[in-house]
Every structure is written in C-alpha cells, then in structure tokens.
Image (tube, rainbow, N blue to C red; front, top):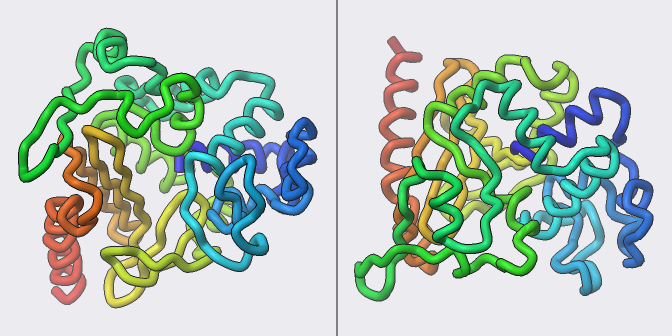
Length: 276
C-alpha cells in the first residue's frame, strides 16, 4: 500500500492515469503485454503478469493473481520515470511526510549489512524443520544480485509506531484526495483469501466487509518476519502486528495464527461496542 500510495499521489497530481498502459511510461519494455496492461491492473493484481519474460497468465482485468515482486516493481519504475527521482528517494520523502522516523528501504545485500545499516532492527528467525528456529538469512527467498525487485512489494523496514502514523496519514486524508482514496479502498476485484475467504481487493489493500465492521488491511511475509496492518475506518482503530519469526509458509493459518487471534479479539470488542 506504500507503493500504491506513491502511484496514487502522482495520479492526484495529474502525472499518471490509471487507464494508461505501462508502455506509455516505460517505452523500453518490449513485451507485447506492456501495451495491454494498464496501471490500475498492476495496482490491484489483475494484470496477468507472472514474469517479465513470460506471456500473460490470463486476460488483464479478468482474474486476481497476487504477484507483488513483479507488478509492484514495475510500478516503482513508473514512479521513478514520472517523478524523476529514485524509488528510495521518493520513499524517504513519503516517510518524512508521515513522520515515520524509524522506517527505511531494506537496501542491503547481506544479513550482516542489513543489521549494520539498521542497528535497531530486531533479528528475524526462520523455522527450520519441526519448530527449530535459526537466524534468518537475507539471501533466502531474496535475489541479492537484483534485490530491487523486493523493495516496492515487501522490502520496507518499519516499527509499530511508524505504521500507526502511516495509517493515520493515509486514512485521515493527509496523503490522497478524497476521490483517489475512495478508489484505493474500493473493492476493484475479489481474492480468495486463505484465512478470510473471499474478500475485496483495492489498490494495495484488502477490503473486508461481510459480517464485520469495514476493515482495510494487508499482511506480509519474508524470511524472518511476518506482519499485519489493519484499519477500521468507522471506529478509527488501528491494529499493527509485527513478528520476528517466519513459520513454515506451507501452513498459512499457522503462520498468521497469532495475528488472526489478535484480530478476532479486536473485532469482538468492536462488535460489542456497536451493540452497546
């Protein structure tokens, strides 16, 4: 949602149109789909792109397929081209604007370098076998030779306090126009969520409406770290869960079990307050 907001800010400034094809901003792309896939479809993961060097998996706009490493990398390149600044610079400016003093792009090529650059970063642990934990290595699951792919979709270091500031800035109108924000949180498509069932998906955010208060959220997973960020706009309540252990991803429910338990406690409280 951070990269999505960067793009939507440029939309507000009239520098990007959601309906424009990628090729308009990245003419160097020679893939045929660059003239077919538009910015909106990158934002809501309906582009059909699975790899830069493969044909589309489906007609753009028809289905949802979560692919942040590729599609959000392309969005970062669009942002760089339109703004004239490096993605890391754009990110720093956004963090300054939102008072996120302990947030940064994880631009490191080794675990040691990562912790040297960010001395306050808590070490991440990864499950190895049956509940055995080891310090997660940055090179597991991340392409160190070309790690720019990681940053726009899931490569940001932050803190619970900073992510609270992010929620307050984004959802209380400090970053986007009302029109663009409404587009961002409107369900543009549906995704079959492993834990929540079928839910809506906007621009970089999940939208849950059924049988509960309106919820805008997203979760994240990289080796060593698991995260969940939720906002309930009616109640103006934020939930931030940051965990420095990445459990075996083959069991998604177990990976996010603590996050889901916290979410259920908050939801039950919000429902109770509504009845009262």
